[in-house]
Length: 352
Image 1 (spheres, helix red, strand yellow):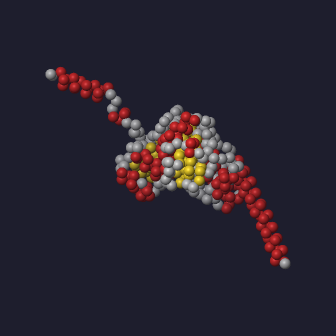
Image 2 (cartoon, rainbow, N blue to C red):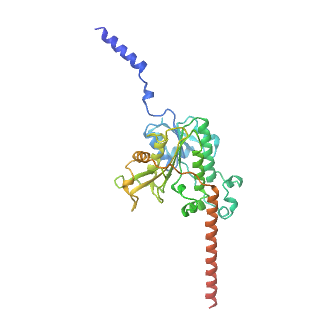
């Protein structure tokens, strides 16, 4: 009878010595995921998604008080998983402090910087690096969409952070000569061009994996899963306009940041993917429902199975400047000619 306790003790010691501990069995990363732009409408959804999965999250925001307000419910429900950090993508030191010790970085920030009349009309403003020399504010897309990406890559390489996810836009896949591309760049200080340059900066790293998400027009409306599905395309061949919900974009970013399904497999591998809703979107049809999947996870899986050419490379900055000049000056010439005709007609009518 004495052998039973001895056998039980032996089995207990065997389990303690030779089986993996609980930490090794857990899929939750020990290091947090950094969300940049955590108070934005996509960023806050990503923070909630990470917390709901039990993933520790470092939420970077420029205003800590706003961060507490926006993320109040998520932090109340998951006080041990969400940490607020003060920082700005245009401040290298605060960016470095936020990135150090993380498992991946989700860059979900954006900027809205309307073009001034001078920068719209004067070619000296169209140079790729002109904002730096002309003293543009740090909110300019040159700094937030491009220079910040260079800093992120440098910091991640230095501190061995393996993966970066960046949110840009579907228009980044358009030619510099496309009227939609020209319009966005003309109105928003070449935001699309600097997004493209930022994407290229991420793809230039030989060690840091990157996933670039290009969504269509963002919507806060909840998706009707019965009529509307999600499509992710690694060839970025999705035609605009393409509406998609912020909740699905946030889920796609989190999925990529956690590298679920082996999205990126080796050091320095880079993926660019377009995302949209298909099926019945609001009052109209946007692609066929059969092109999409019911969940973001299934859409990623289908995209990986489909393969395709993983393109999305950059084009020379001079093409954007030349296209901008041709369209803007061409429009002004037509408008001026029309004004002269209208003025001449008015004078003739007055003479009558």
